[in-house]
Structures are given as C-alpha cells and as structure tokens.
Length: 209
Length: 326
Image (cartoon, rainbow over all chains, first blue to last red; front, side, top):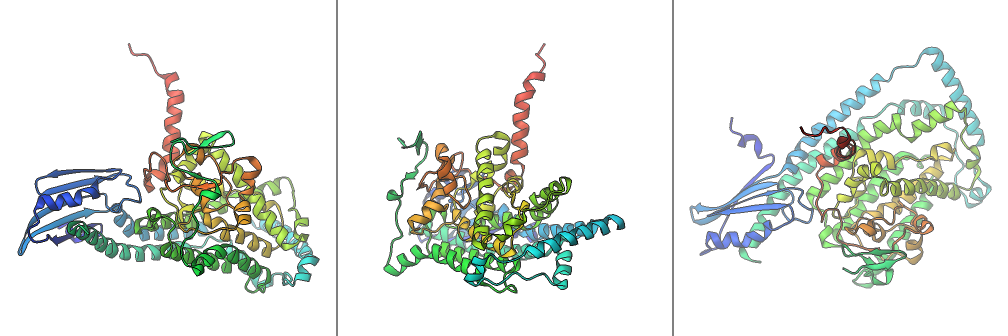
C-alpha cells in the first residue's frame, strides 16, 4: 500500500524554485539558522539537510515539525528546494476527535452504569433530601442590603426545575462532542495554515528578506 | 546575573526578572489605546458584577456563566492577537491545539472523575457520616460579601495547596509539568497533569450553603481576575488592582526560569494572600519555563508524576535492598 495515500495527514511536502544563480550550498546556508534552535539536531550532506527536534520550545518557528529533510534538486526550470516535513502535532490533532468521541461514549456508558439505589434506601434518601431542600428554601431570603440595592429575590425552584436538576446528575457527553468538533476544525486549519507558513518562512529565508 | 534582593531572597540571579512596578513598561500608543488597556480590566469586572447582581432569575444560571466564560476568553484571545505583550509569547497553532487539548480534558474526563471523588462528593460524605448540616447562616449575608468569602476562602485553600506543591516533592511532581510552559496565553492555566488539576480544584466551599447568585458572582472574580494570570496582553492595571489581585506580571514571575522567583505569587485571584504571608514579588519576567525552556510534550506531562515518583522511590529504597556484587 502506498503510504503517501494516508501520510499526507501529518507529512508536509512542497517545493520552491531557487533564485536564478543561487547554488544549493548558498540556499542551505540561508536556511541553516532555522535549525540552530534548542532541541534541534541537524546534519548536512551535499545537497541535503535533515533535522530532528525533541521538546522544541514554542518560540521555535518550526516547532510544529518534529523531523524532516530538505534537498536541492533539479526542476524543469532550474534548481528547486524540495522539502518533506513530519509533524506529530498534526497527526495528534487529526486523531483527537476520535479520542473525544471515545470519551463521549465512556461518559454515556458511565451514566448507564449508575445503578439505581435500592428502593428503600432510595425512598429514605429522597425524603431526607426533600426535607433539607425545604429547610434551605425557607431560608433563601435576600439580605436587606441587597433588597435595598434592588437585586432580584431568589426564586424557589419549580417542579420542572427540580426534575431537570435530578436529570442533570447524569454525566453529559455534550462537552466531548463539542471538543471532537473543535479538533476536527482545528486540524483542517492547521494542515492548511502550517503548510503555507513553512513555505513562506523558507521563501523569505531563501530570498534573504 | 546579580539579581535583586526582595526580603531575604535574591530574585533574578539565574534568569532575568524585572522587580518593582516602577520598572515595568506601560502600554504604548495613542491616548485611546492607553485608555482602553487601562480601563479594560476594572470595567469588565464591575460590568460582570453588576450583570450577575441584577440579572433576572431566568438569566442568572450556570449555563449563562459558561456562555459568558467562553465569550470572554474568545475576546481575550482576540486581544492577544491584536496587542501581544511579548512577540515571543505569540500564540501559534500548535500551542493553541495543545492548550485546547488540556481544556478539553478538563471539561470531560476531569469533570467526570470530579463528580465521583471531587470535593463535592467528599464533603457530602463527611456531612453524611457526621450528620452535619451545611452552614445555612451564610445565606443571610449580603450577596457581595457571600461572593467575596466564597472566592477568598477557595483561593486561600488554593494558595496553601499551591505553596505545598512547591515545597513538598510528592505534590511537586504533580505540579511540575505546568511549569514547563514557555509562554503565557489565555488557556495555559489548563496545561498540566490531571492529578494536579484535580488537587488544585479541591475546596471547602461545599460546607456552606449560599445563594446561587452569590456563587455566580464569586465565579466572576475567577473569570474577570484569575484569567489574566495566563495571558499575552499588557494592561496598565490600576494600583489598587495590583495590590489586591493577581496579574500577568505576578504570574510571569512565578513561571520565571529563576528558581527563587518561581517560589512566589502562589495565589490564584487574591495576591493579597501572598502579601499576607510574605511570598509576593511585584515584577515581571519574559523568559519562562524549566530546564532552560524545554517544552514538555503531552505524553510526558501525562506520565511525569508517576515516572518521577517511581524514580524517587527506586532511588530511596532501591539502594537498601541492592545486593553487593560477588
């Protein structure tokens, strides 16, 4: 199976034409400072530069990539810089929605597993809770200072609210669904944005601007 | 580096830290920009307090608070993008994705675990065993006093838990991953090992009975003050604000690469607690993190407390049982 069919998810490939007359040595010299960063090791062999990063700081302009190769080759119109960069962050972000969907299913399963208490214990607990709630509601009064300042008086919860409150005790998977969606969107943004940004970064370095 | 003496300590001997409000830069730009960044923090705080104080009961609900919280953080992310405090702290896609991962864990897994073994569950168990009713007299206090006490008592507990984390190794291993962040951004407060986030979330507020509106008002202090601990925006915070509340400046000192500086400013919202116990350092730092700015990966963050504890146990007890070589 051709791995390129799936590894585009976290592999970024691209090429850039060198300026007329620019040699491979000059091009790699200009890119070299990008790899002189904390947590980065790089090697040059002829027309090729390879690098590997570990625990790279957020301030590293290429922090999203963990390893890669840059090579100056021959294009149809002259020398070109070809690069192949690998990002675990992109792969992780691609997989994050699956993780959050799994969490949502675990949350649903935990909610179902909450065993209903025995009838007698349940009844006794409900009665005790009702007593406590009634006592609490009787004391729910605004302080005279707040009344003077015009704060709305607290409302006793209606039957509908109470039912809702009881229902809310079950863990909800909504947050996990929301984060699955956020990471799906974040992946699409990152895959396009980081591809463009690294190209711009290389272009600026090659042109010396 | 010579450092600066603050009380009995030398701050900034290992990494640059600016000490003293008079040495901290102000917001630069036109009068409107300066006015905006001077008034923003107090205006938002008072507006939110007024909102929760007067909002009708149909609106004053937890769901509204979540909506406001998300909206406020989006606004602050916008400010970070428009007016970053330091270019070196600028939010990148990778940082945003990483931060949101931890935020996501907090809203899902941590919340689920918390519902079973969190402070609420523990307090309920204690009350049940000791047949202990909640302190209902608390509800009779004025709303703003209730809100202040909820916020202050919770922060007081957090202060000691946080200080304990910096002084006792078993707690430190849970908190250390949070100190590997190399910049401050809006969601960086969520970055850390879930065990630490669980511990730091423990409070005694559940022992008290308070009006729902007071809890919402107390949450406003966390949102409209505590959020600024981790943010890449410079504000001209008023003097009274800096005296009472934690700021980005204070928290950047706490995250500094300088060891002594990192042992200061432990509170979450009320920096006055640090002033009370002599741990406050007024200043700021740009160079943050541990081990010279090494960024800790998510995988290492998740296992760090366990792997470091295992190493420490092996080191302590391993030698005793080691057999001499023949």
